[in-house]
Amino acid sequence: MRCSLALFSPAVAGVNPFAEIPPEEFFEPLKGFKPAPASEFKPKAQIPRFTNITNDQFVKLVRRGQPFVVDDCVKDHPMMGFVCKDFSEKWPTGQMKAEYSGGGRTTLGDPAWYSTARPAKGWADHMTAGRRISGPYVWHVKDEEPLPIKRSVQEYWKTPYFLNGTHMNRLEAWDSFEMWFSLPDGGAMAHSDSYNEMTISAQFTGTKKWRLMMFPELRTIFDSFESFDTGVYKEKKWAPEYEFDVGPGQCFVFPPGYMHETWSNPEINDVCATATTFQFNAPFPAQYIRNFLPRFSNSHLVSAENAMEIYSSYATIAKAQPKPTSDKGEIQKRVDSKFVDIDANKDSQITEAELRAFFLTNPKGKWGQAYEFAWGRYIKDPQVKKEMAQERGEYRAGDTLAWHDLNEDGHISREELLQTFTQWNVLVERHRKLMKAKASKKAVAQAKTIEEKYAKEYMCPTGPAQCPVVDRIRAKKAKSRQSVVWFQGDEDEEKERKEL
Image (cartoon, rainbow, N blue to C red; front, side):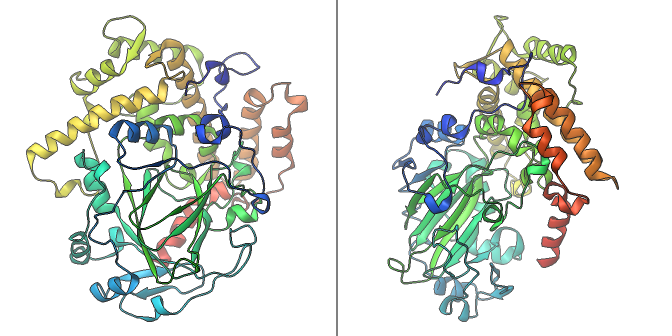
């Protein structure tokens, strides 16, 4: 899909860093889609499904952030056919979390968890229409088990075929998995995960039904909401786009921020079903993140998960994040500097080949080969390290092109880089001002002033006198930091750490 640069040009003069292509135009399967409340949802959009997916297909889908299903994902995985009882008997000391029903933590060795349902509170907007369903269990093998237990489980691990072409994807999947267990008539409430990476959910036994939707538009931090389980229901924002099944051997691949709910229909599931969720590193969903950056900047991905630091190197083409500025002259200087460093043939177009040369051979760009993965310390083979650096540089070249090539013609023009640099600088400048306000005793009042300033400049095409965004900011009755969800990230993280 090619996108018009006009979509990034506002009615007012200059570049609008808060503009987005809406989901129903950005994602091909959503063409013609009209959001509706969950109670009125009728599945129309078709989730893309693949068998024998090629690397080219995989890369294009991921950079676009398009959710999709791979039907032959884990068909030969050693855990295929494992039911909950198998995990209980093989790893009885494992510690897992019971979701929703106040079940706390339990050991895998206790047979009660896979033989007795724990009814959780029902929600009318869930696909079960308010009926109480059984809460699932999650076993965080990746980061909550002693290393010997983790290594024991990893002996049964096999990374999906389409991730085995690179060390960094194969090893990230091997290191990052967690297990999900669901009794018949069990499921998960709508939520958005906290990961700033692409995620895969693969089914070993049972069939899981999914509904999902793009993270809702948030114009300011005062539109932020609790994005974990059920929060989107409470805010009346749940408007599903897709409904589909994922069965044994299949997997669902989705980008950061995409909201989802699940259900194990008891009419087709008669055992405690098992699945795994894990992440991978490359490619990066660059087109997706850049297009929806305005809403994500007001979400948990930024307020609680430091997303701006993760995105920075793609957006700025720099190792260290430059100080953000809204000065047009300074932004233009940064654009010109990147063309001096990267545009080898001086034709005012940056290609993927030039980006690859910059990251792999230019001393100014060799930082692009660096990697910081949790499992990196276990890699001792110099040849593997060398190959991983090459992988990182090559993928970064393609990811960087995808971030800045707005019209998708295969190269980055000066105009495009000016637009993407402007978007990033303005959004990060605003973000840092809000983070500074967050530490103040007058956080809400200061945040209102900041948000009103940016809204007047960028979100009021007919002028600030008649501007719904400004009106909503002024009408917000929040008085304390606790009443603004965007301000709660640190507190939520601390609460979760204590629970664990």
